[in-house]
Amino acid sequence: MDVVRLSRRGRAWRLAASAVVLALLAYGTVWGTDDHFPFGPLTQYAFAADPNGTVPDLYIEAETSAGTVVKVPLSPDGVGIGRAEVEGQLDAIRRDPSLLQGIADAHRRLHPDEPRYLVLHLRIRHTRLRRGVVVGSEVEQVVDWTVR
Image (cartoon, rainbow, N blue to C red; front, side, top):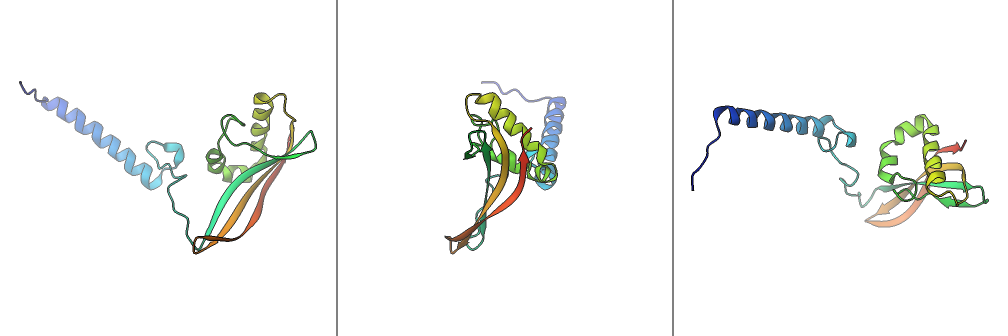
């Protein structure tokens, strides 16, 4: 079997392409966010819980037109957006709670036969651990949004 060697030009092109990819990965690792994936870190599962710390759990509750309070299903089938995506936009939502309107609109579009969302409550449950055992929790009220 004959071995075909790359030309000088072919080697240079591959080395240049490799250098660009490595530079993007290095930049994304140091300064990137999940929005830069695959050249930035996908960090939503990239940490371990401190056995003597707290574990945050973001969720949204909705007051409905039926007079009930329900947990909003943060999934593609539920409202078209996952919990990690909401977590990634948390700072923006804190600054502008009207961003939650899209969740209510998506629910209405995806589930027209269900009661409409009237008010959305974005919350984070902080569960405290001691030696890896739950010793308590408290709920942080992040923002509320009255649906238009």
